[in-house]
Image 1 (cartoon, rainbow, N blue to C red):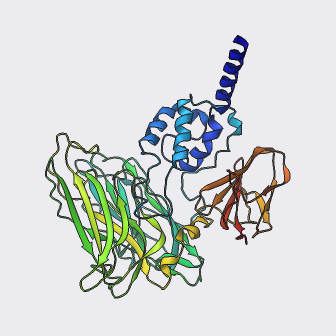
Image 2: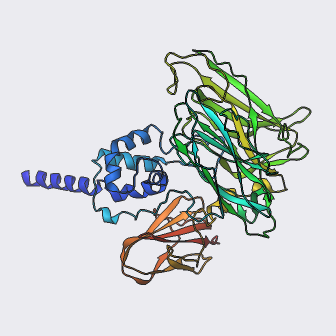
Image 3: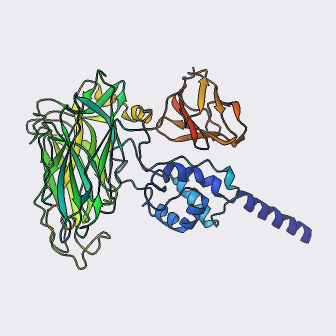
Length: 533
């Protein structure tokens, strides 16, 4: 009996040890959901490797369980966007189980290789960089807003297909609004009181948590902001109180369509929903609204035609807790309410332009509406004042704002059916998806037959001995299956995917992406699974 009990005990312990998660089991989650922000050249702390993740393991568990990380504000039951930073229940459980189990390393060499990151979100070299001269902040006893105008020296019109605003000194750059001064005659206003948007229209913005902006740039939709010859880029930069004496050199990195490119639809941007009357007395919770037509106070649009909304950028300060944007029929018009964005738990530290998965059609007679709720009580965890004080609308961080921006195009028939997500996800600036193309950091690869029904061969060439990691994703970036994770010798290799997911089920017909990583080198390619009869 003792021997039998000993056997059962040994078997139980063996199964427990075998099932215990180790770093390689959760490393793919950190790579896909965390490291894009948490690396040495971006936001601290860095999670690039087991030892760094281990140091913050308990903090990571807490943030994940409370839903703070990865940060994503819009309610996905209301509207959907292209770049949602969402962790699944299974991924959350995997991290929690790993930490609760002691955050064991296991064989860390079996973990996927860490991607190569830089200080920029877009790794490719920009076509044009526009940077303000090094500026010493004058924000001493109050928040300041300074406006800079920088020449582009363009001799012909160009269309922007992607851009990245880079704060020169993130510690003191509260936000940046980037505009286009089409006449090129704007002059700097460094008084600290430049509150209006400089330039003729909004091009882009930067705030805590803002990601690089990509416009859909291939059929069926090529869109971009027009940057006219002789124009200037204008920057409105908000520096906080107490930043005086610190230096900044903020810039924007611009990526253009090729010269002579045809079929580009112009993107427009403006802060359409504003409310500057926000009396929020201490110890109260209040909701304020704003209303606008697409063409209201806008010299670009007259409101005489339908619009296709591409992205939204709702904005407020610390007291805001809930916000919602939507569109409703205007006077003498009938129709349904159109949802745009809803945020149930506003966090000032994570904001930016949110691009819709599909363009949202706004009929010309519809009104845009905004509702912001502000909690000026001690119950608000983001309350900056103890005890609470009366707060009004204003430009300083101690004030409040209702300041919601949009980008849009002139509507064309069928816009609302265009899958923006799939177009942007295949942009080489985003993922490098360009089969048969390879450069210094690329692996030569090829998939055949492609399209296919039952199986595809993925061939690739390694210049050096490497740990090779190959994974299949849906076109939306959801992992389907890891088909290789092992050390390989240099030379030609080939792996076969049987069109099944990690659970062994056959995947649906449609587009997929394969990703090959070997050290710092990588390859991407699009796969098309045909519908089975």
